[in-house]
Structures are given as C-alpha cells and as structure tokens.
Length: 238
Image 1 (cartoon, rainbow, N blue to C red):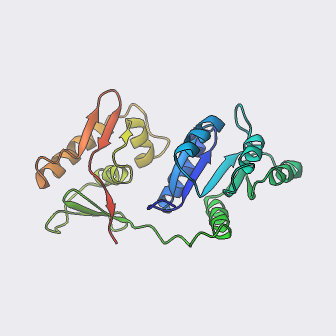
Image 2 (image 1 turned 135 degrees about the vertical axis):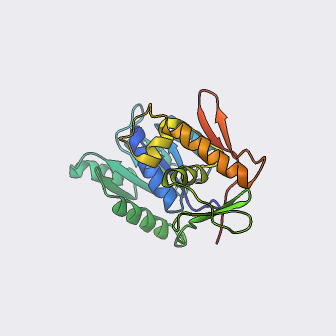
Image 3 (image 1 turned 180 degrees about the horizontal axis):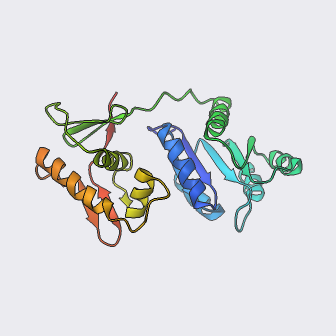
C-alpha cells in the first residue's frame, strides 16, 4: 500500500471515465494509476504493485476477459470488472475468468466506492481513514473544507472564490503539468469553454498574492505549450 492509501489501477479506454473515477477515488484518499488499455496497464504493473484493479470489459486490443484470465495466472490482486453489458452471461464469464466482482455501467459513485472498499476488506486491507483536507505547502496551510488559506503567521489570506478553486486544484495535483482545459474542467465543470482565458487571469492574480506573502517562492510555473505547474511539495496536515 502506498503512503497515500491503497493503489487502484483504472483500466478503461474511455478518458472521461478514467478521469471521473480517478478524481473520485483521489478525493477519497486512494492513489490512482490510469491506463487506457492492456499494454498501458502492463506498464503500470511493471513499476508498482496495486491493491485493486478496476477493469473495463470492452477494451481495444486485448479485452478485459483476456486481461483478467492472464492476470489470474500469476496474481491474486482483486479485480472489479466494469461492463456496459447487462446480460448475465457476461457477468458469469467475467467471474469465471477470475474477476472478484462486477459493476454494470452506468454506475453511481457510492456503489463504486462501496464495492471497492468491500473488495479491499476481503483482501485484508485495513479500513481507509478519511483523507485529510488540510495541506501545507511552502509557507502556507490551506483548508479545503473551510475554504481558508493561512500564511506563515497563521493569518487568513483573502482570495476570491475563483482564486481559491484554482489553488485547490493545484494543491491536489502538485508537480504535475495542468493544461488550461484540465484546470477549467476541474474548477468549472465540463461545460467550460476550452478557449476561456479566465485561467490565465486567475493564475496571474493568485501568483501576485502568493508572491507577496512568500517572496521568491515561484509556486506556479508556466509550461510553454503545456499549461501550468504547481512547483511546491504538498503535505497533508492532520
């Protein structure tokens, strides 16, 4: 198990599902490794030992049933099979191939979490403690639930709603290049205009406020032709 929680590999060729499920699990304290197909999953498994695999049945190339059968020849990692099919035969075959449970698309987030936690308990995992929603970085502490940012002296800083949402997005994805589209998606939803320049204005304003409280910190870097990168290490605060 990783220090941030059990590692969940999401194998699905639908980028939206990988993103939505990944964001859900990260908010619940899990570490997530996305993979768009069997080859990408194999690359993940070559460098990490997951605690559970969420595996889509309908994959390009090697399908989920074949992947499940292959994994079961060498591994006992719990497998939760996802399928858009509701026929009983598909569920039966998946279980016979070695899947531990199945979930039919579309599914609700609560059911997905319940099934994942049940499989981890059956596999001997300890119950996952609620994730911390307070984080420390550079000279600051941010409380996502209270929507409060404090400086080195413990004084609350004034941020607009948009600035706080942007900072929360960065703090939860540190040292990772985020495109403007990703930031808009995570802060304003999937209906946001990908050509909206609001992100650039918010970044500029947030930079000025962070720089004023921590001169020379350079917490947000611009990545040419990429987007933005939050440079500071982030640690949960109990």
